[in-house]
Image 1 (cartoon, rainbow, N blue to C red):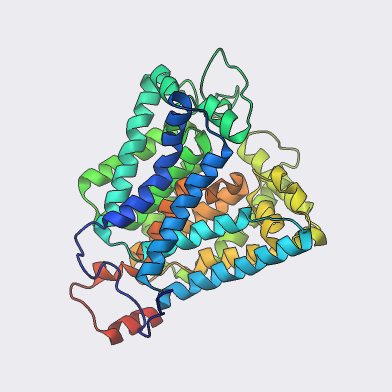
Image 2: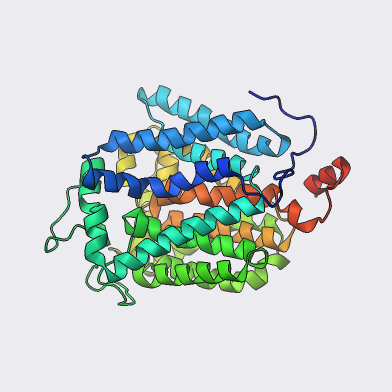
Length: 425
C-alpha cells in the first residue's frame, strides 16, 4: 500500500483541473450501467445467474481498490478508513458469533467507503461528465420505455433477468416482460403518465426513484458550477422520473430540497446529526397516529419499519439474529441493526452526518440533502440506498465535495498551511 502522506491533504485534481480523468470515468460508469448490459446479454446471448451479477460487482470494486492503492492514502481518507475498519471488525465478529460467512452489510460499507475515496481524486470536469453521461443514458432509455414499451421489453426483458439472476419468479401480467414490481398497483398514488412504474436502465423501479434523489443532491451541490444545459438536462430527467415512476418519497424529497436550497447554507453542518433522530421521531409519530396502516403507502412503510424496530431484542442488537435479515428489505434501520449490530448503526449515523464538509454553501446543501435522502430512505425504502447502482455516484459526489470543492473557492493553488487551516475549519 502506498505510504500515507505526512501532509495534511492531497489536492484532488491538482494536475489537469479541467481535464476529465478517464480512469475514474471508466470505473464509475459501469456501476450504473452494468445491470442493463447484463440484462441484454441474458435476453439475447445466454441466460445468466446470480454469480454473474456478483462477479460483475466484485470486479468493479476490485478495480476501484487497485486504483486507490496506486494513488495512496492521505489524511482526509482516515475517517473513511476508520469507518471501514470498524465495520470490518464488526463483520468478523458477526461471522464468529453466528458461525457463518456473512458479508452482505460489509459489502455495502465497502461501496460507500471506496467510492467516497475515489471522489476525493476526481476533479469537477470528471464528476460533471460522469453525471451527464449517466443522466443521458437514463433519460434516453426512460423515453423509450414510456413511449415504446414493447421495444424496451424486447431489449431488456426485465422479468427474465430478475427470475434468472435473483430467483424472483414473475407473475404474468398479460404477457408483459416487465419486472412484476413495476406494474401499477390499484389505488396507489400515480400521476397517470405511464401505464407502469418506470425503471429505465435499472430495470426495477426502486433504483430509478433513488437515482432521481441522487440527481437532486447533485443539483443542490453543483447548481452554480455546471452549465445551463446540464441544469436543464438534470431537471428534465428528475421530473420525468418522478412523474412516471410514481415515487412519493422522491416527490417529497424534491420539495424539501427546493426549500433547503435557500435554508441549508445558513445552517451549521453539525446540525445534520439531528436528521436521523428527527426522522425516527417523525416515524414514531406517524405510528402513533396511524398504528394500523399497512401496505404500499408511506404510512404503511413507516409503520412497518417502526414495528420491525420494536421487535429488536438484545440478540438483534448484538448481531445474533441474522436469520431474519431476508425479511427486512423494506426496513432499513432494522436491517442495519440486524446486519451490523447497534454499533454499526451508530457508526453509520456518525459517518453520514459528519463526513461531508461544510465550508461553503454548496457543501452545506450537499451535506443536508445527503442526510435527509439517506435516512428518509432507510425509513421508507429499506436497504436499496446501499445498492452500487446509485450509491457509487452518490458517494463519488460526497468525496468530491469534501476535498475538490477547494478548487472552486480558491482561484490559485493554496499553500500547505492554507490547506491545514481549511481542514481545521
